[in-house]
Structure formats: C-alpha cells, structure tokens
Figure (tube, rainbow over the protein chains, first blue to last red):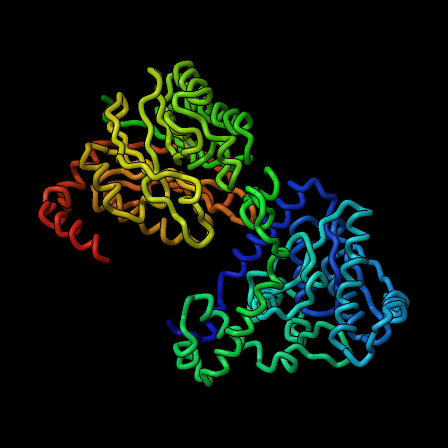
Length: 280
Length: 277
C-alpha cells in the first residue's frame, strides 16, 4: 500500500456533512439544549466549534475560554475570539488561575517541579468548568481530541479526553487542518502548532518527538494493518521510529477505555454488558 | 404472474428498540406505495428494531409467526400489497437463539422468510455474537414474480445470490444496514450480482446514525444488465418507486448468457478448495 500524504485527501464536504449530522442527531436524541466546548485558540477546538455551529447553529454552542496565568497567551485568546465571531458562537471566559493555585496549595504532596502532574491538574480543571456549564445549561460536552493524539495517548486521562462526544476523533491531525481550511478557518490558525497548554511553551511535536505529517502516515499504516517494516520502507524512515510509534499506540489503550473491573458477575459493566447508548 | 411490477424502495431510519414506531412507519409507507401503484414495498435490514441494539436483541426478537408478523399479514391483506422488512427472529425451539431475518408478506399472508447466512463479525460488526446463521437461500414464486431474498453482507458472497437465482429468482432483494465507509463496495457488488445472475437486484439500505455508525442509504434498483435504474438519496430518508420488467431478463440472458455458460463441475472444486483456505 502506498503511504503518501494524499491518503489524507478524503472528501471533506462529505466528511463535514457526516460530522454535522452526527452532532445534530446526538444532541437531539439526548434531549440536550446545545453544545458546550472549550475554545483554546488551537486548531482542534476551532474545528469542533465550527462544526458544532454548522450542525446546530452558533447560538446553541457555548464556547468557554479558560485561561490561567502560567499559560496565558493573548494570541490564543484572540484566535479563540476570532473563531467565535466567524461562527457566531456564544462565549464566556473563566479565569482558572485561582482554582489551580488552590489545588497546588491544598495537595500535601504537590511538587511544582513535576510539570506533567501539575499540567494534568489544568486539563482536569478545564473539564470541571465545562461540565459545570453543561450540567447547568443541559448541554452536551463536545471534546476536541483528534485521531493522532488519541492513538498516541497524547492527552490527559479524564481531562481533555472527558467529553460526551468526540466529533473529530476519527480524523488525523493532517485531516483536521485540511477540514479546517475547507470550512474557511484561516490558514494561519489551521497550521498553528499544537499545544496541550499544560505548561508554558509546551509544543506537541517537540514533546512527542516526531512531526505530525510523519506520525500520521505511520499511524495510518498501522490502522491499515501494515507492519512497521512495510511502513518504514514506504515512507522512508527508520523502522525503529515506526516501532516507537506503534509501541506508544499500543501501550496507551488503557487511556482510551473505561476503567477495567475484575469479572465476578454474570454480566459486567464495561466488559460484556453491551447496550445501545440511547434508544434513538 | 405479472410481466411487470412496480417496486417501492422505502429507505428509512429506524428508532432503536421501538417496534411500534417502526411498524407504524412501515404501515404508512406501505399505504404510500399502494397509492403510487406499487406492488411491492421493501424496507431495510432490521428496520423493525434498529440495527445497533446489542444485548437488547433478546428482548426484541419474536417468533415467526408472532405478533409483528400477524400485524404485517393484516396490513398486506388490507392493502393488497406485498412487502419485505427485516427483524430479529427468535427460534421456535429455543429461547435465546436469534436470526437476522427478512420477512416477506403478501395479501394472502406470510409468503416466507430468509435468515441471513453470512454474519459479519469484524470491524464494527458483531453479528455472530448474537445471531445464528441461516442455512437456506430463499426464492419465492408469487403473483408478482419469483422474488429472492438476501441480507447485506450476503451480497459479498456470490454463491448466495447465485443459488437464489438458480432457485428461480428474477428479482433478488437485498435488504441492508450498511455504514458509510462501505458504500463503494455495495455500489459495485449490487451491479456485479445483477450482471452475473442476469436478474434484477433491489438494494434497500438503512439511513440514520446509531451509536456513531451512519448508514448511507443509496438504495437502488439495478437491471439485469447492471444499469442503475433508480437510486435513492445518500444519508437521508427517501422513498422511490421503479418498474421491474421481467422480459428484460431474456434480453440480458441472450446478450451475456452467464447462466447458460455455468460450469457445474467448478462448484465441486470451489467446495474442495474453500475447505482448505
């Protein structure tokens, strides 16, 4: 199988329609009053905001901006506001600084030098804000995880991965950027480097250690049941790089599943209770 | 038997686990089909219950004949219509053995049923977990022609439509619940099955979203020459009617005589080799 960037050139009009239909039907069937999402100023959240607006109308989409002082970026706020204006979203801003500081102060074993543990508090605090609004206004929380980051496990468990729906979780980052441009999101934002904003100057590609365009091709090959040897040969990288990506993909399955329980009963939640999400 | 019939392809979405609402839709569209002069209305696979019902299948399955089939027979009698729909069938002999079944009723009552033979259990599908496969192909001689039945994934296996055709089917009906990623396969296979069997193929697919799976619709009638006679919309509910002219089979059979040229001895080899894949 050929592994070239053209594999990501899907029919973006059809993809847009399919995702919008998914969002609309889910919100309607759940009996919710709209969508709640976090708008960070990055491309993933910009895209779910745009798709949600196209699906159910901007007035039914409440976008929350959640800055905190350590990661504060006026550029991110401006980019988020521009998306909200373009797709006519309702917006609100909540400063999380004092909340996160309170966590740092109240956790007896808190270690300010452990930036990952500290950063995960931020991701989970964002989740708490979003779900408060969602509860209060009977809305569905729309997550912004994409396929690249989900496969790599590059997200915070119960943080940014906590949502009711994930409309772009089956799109690689490369496709996220292309779909964003298709929807009229400015090129500058579509190609903006990704960051989970867990600590200052954190950049996804630097942290993962591989460019998205390469990582996406490797992941695409794994999705299509190719061996790491075949993938490496096809895209011209060291086999060890493909193996590293594969290992990371497999070792993070625990982050993508519901918590596991020892099987004791006849039918067990998360194992062999298999039920529809909702009737319609 | 009629030389020509009018067929209605009723491409619907189903409310999961709501047999009453879904049967009401079947009822409404059967009346609509009659108003438009159709002789036969076709509804998708599992259109009575929805496709993605997981463990709820045990509550939803019914024996045949059972309450729903009795209602279907009454509807067929009242309207003078023939119609086909999909439902989970509970075995007559056991209490939790279920089949993925197509029901065919006409003005005189239940004409027959077909139990899906090939149960997809890969990718997003888990049919073998819930269903027992059928063992018989189905072709029914009726007042509106010889109608054969198959269900969705069966169409990937040429032996099912072929055997159905060899039993006499002139119109092969394939009811389906196919998610969007598979569209191109079905668009190709419906034409291929029509051409290789010199028979009409009526394909009726579900629409709507069920647990993230989006069914793509695109129901169609394909002529024995492989031409798409009529096609319903992608992704949305639709209702289209079309004519099936059985004399077209003669033209197709004379032009590319695939049935005349069948080589029975190859089927023995096929059996022999398929046992040792």
